[in-house]
Image 1 (cartoon, rainbow, N blue to C red):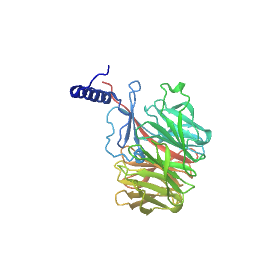
Image 2: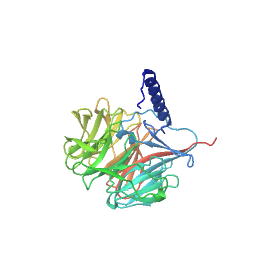
Image 3: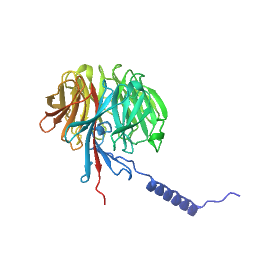
Image 4: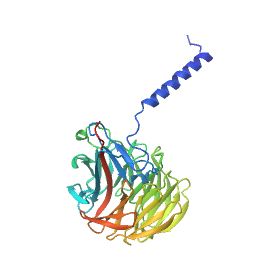
Length: 382
């Protein structure tokens, strides 16, 4: 016999479903990182420290309202990938001294911090591997397979790991770290391969993680990828050789460096209408956003300069000189310094952002490229 459900029964059932939904929401573990800049990655109780990163929020369009942690022991580090040196330099940002240089795979480029904050992953493009650096011991503890990992990062919702495979002309979509012990890890599970254009390299995400924006340097296009449907939905003609990109807080404006035309182009991320062309200098390449999201720093690799763009007015307000082909950059979590790799030399440069002057010049390996700035904070024991 079928039960008859009256109005009272319906109300009770709705209340039960609603209560179950609220309970499920309360049981959801919050993501391990904040959505603000600087990016804060909290580790588990065994390691008892957290990593505060400068710079990366430019690809999420995150606001600048996260306060750095005070108190406790702090290790301020810079990690620099040396592409032609097949190594990574670890630099103490308080003494400006290279602490150690670790040998990695063939042609390393970009780096990310693992979701649990324990490791720094470095992509070795020509080796098809990722070196895992333990942030506590600052040693390489594992080499993982990953196909053509030129650039890699997690989506804003921390549900996917994505890569740009420059040699293969596509984006790789992977499941996030699905292991509990790195020693037993055999690599990431590939979920999709999405063709883009020629030499996809840099990227950004809509703040909700729905869309990914990818520059295709040698087909002169910007690809818009729907990460939910895992397919290419739009190609935008950009001009010669688009490379790095940055989002304003909120993600409504996307800045793209156009290397071959010495400028930055600003796009509306709803319509992808071109808002502005901003001349900077020959070889416009790398980008970094100030902690408050108000200033965009652009390296002009062939002009050996860095331009400062006011994000609101989209005008260049300052230009300063950096020798040896300034490449990738990051702003320190406290917002005071800009670290710039010199791609045509073996140096990384430290710029005081209050003056625009180089204050330090640090020798690294050959062709330094990627740079990641991390504050490792060990809170005081109770």
